[in-house]
Length: 231
Image (cartoon, rainbow, N blue to C red; front, side):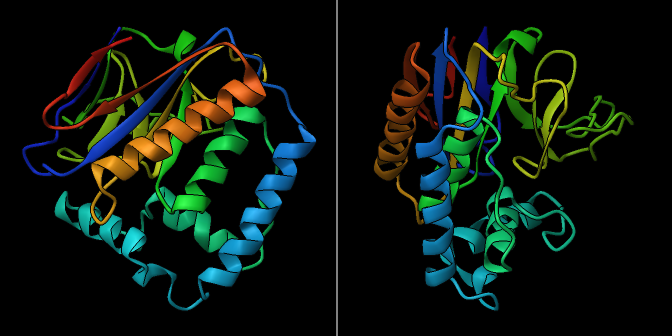
C-alpha cells in the first residue's frame, strides 16, 4: 500500500506524521487513558479562553489553510478547532476506544489535528490530494453519500474519501472500532509547528500505542522532501 501527499505545491511547509500499528488491541474503557483525556481537557480550558481559541496560532494557521483551498472555516472547522471548541465550552469528551482516546489526547496536548483509520478497510493506495468533485464520501456514522468540492483537500483511497477538507470530517468506511487490528494514525502540522516538533509528537503517539495497544508500531514523517511511503 502506497501512502502519498500531493499538495506540497500549495502547502510546501506542511508535515504529516503517520503512525502505523499492526496486530494491536483497541479496547474500550481503559481507565488510565480516560484519566489522561480528562486531565488534558482541564488543562486546555485553563490555557485557552472560550473567546480567543480561534486566534491561537495552532488554530489560526489551519483556518488560513482552509481559506487557501476555498473553504470557509466558519462552516467547516479544522478538527483541532472543533475539538477545542467542545472542550472550552464545557462539553466533556467521551472515551471511545484506545486509539481514538490517544489521538484526541495528542490533539489537545499539542493543538494539532490528529485522526486515524482502520487500514483493513482501505482499498488500494492512500493519498492526501485535491478532489475532482466526483469522489464518494459517507460521513462518520452516516449513510448518505456526499461529494467533495473540486479542489478541496481530501484524504482518500482508490474508492472513497476517508476525510474531507483535509481533517474536517472523517468518513464512516474506515472508522475505528474495538475490533481494529491494523491502523494508521495521522498527525497534521503546519507552521508554527516545525518538522522536528512534528516528529516528536508523532513519536509520542507511537509510544502511547505501544503502551496501551501493543502490536508492531512504526512511524513515518511525510514532507515535501519525502512525499510517499510504502506501508
